[in-house]
Length: 174
Ligand SMILES: [Fe+2]
Ligand SMILES: [Fe+2]
Image: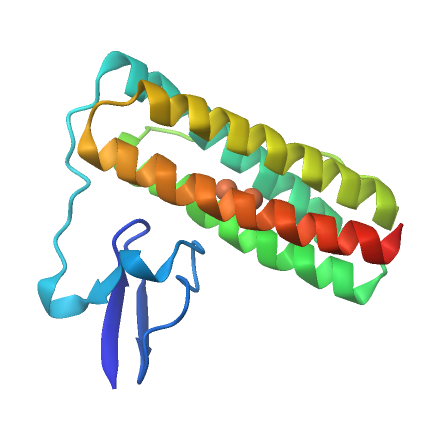
């Protein structure tokens, strides 16, 4: 058995083989490494613009997590509800990535609503993921710190994967 750590979210996966993506935050395999060589890189001095983008990223992820939680509990279609349950976990983990670096005293209270309708939820999900990718692309272009660039790029690519998932599910359920 081996112990793998994700360089982006810091979560630990124990198993015989390296997973294809982080089972917690969904980033690519290249960000996973063995525990004995892991280093905490979260003590980073943030520029003003990166701090602002991290705060916005935290809000964006909490908002998306809240929406997915609502959709996972509201929808009666099992497959789509389970997809949203999975997305809720991933977006909550993304929020934690920003929390770990920002260390805010308290979290913004964000409660999103959702419709009891598969097509509407899938459409809302795709809109949210597209906005997320657009936001991360801009945040990445504004970042100068290596750690900040690494985090924005890794998470942006996870949101791109979510758009692909939304497109597939939209085809199936619309
Ligand atoms: Fe996310
Ligand atoms: Fe996402």
